[in-house]
Image (cartoon, rainbow, N blue to C red; front, side):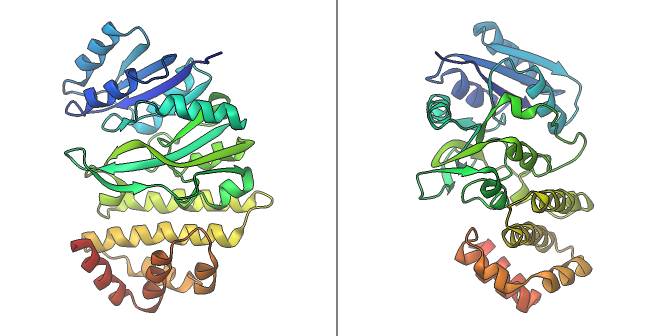
Length: 320
């Protein structure tokens, strides 16, 4: 028997891309959908487009509200979802037409509470520029193994949009309203509640690499919210019995190095932060981390040795 799957789409100022997103959802091969579209105070044509689609498809519900931010939109979506399972799709992205059918089937077949899957990064024209996927095919993880690798992208990560969740996992959990990097501050709590997590290396999600994505952001004072969220995630995960502290601390350093990269792009440097990270990094732990690709281990070694050298290397490869 087919169960209802809720697809939650936060919408804000994306009139150029919204139809592409909605078309990919309503044309899913899996038809039993509850599509909840939340217009978060857009002042472009998004509201009208949402209503147009709802008038032509009775599976679509639209909520119009004053701007509350992505975290609160996700909370409203999880609370108002009618389905047994939840999938988030950002409104400037789109999904493969058989995503729901494949992921739901794998979830039921493997008796898991969460399914993670790969992502394709696409440019303005929809061309794939990078594929975030592994070569492992399929892997089932228990809670502690899933938390061990949550900072990395090999199996599980902190992103909300490349996962299907059992709805009950959100009971008592909410995204932190008013904060940036809400996924980093929340996903680990959901994963911890799950009995098993299935990881699929195949990429079913198309992620538009817009200028507001984490990888493209420049450093501001608000960027330090990423450090706060990463520390919260680390401190909680290491408190869970059976997790690997060495893997988790390397993951924390990895995200702190992302913040340093933002500083380099912005030419805004907090040398106290940089020096402390250099001091904290233990290369033996980095080299021993099975979740970290070799190229990232080299980056850590260069950064540990010389920030000036690391900066030159980063800018060289960024220009290529």
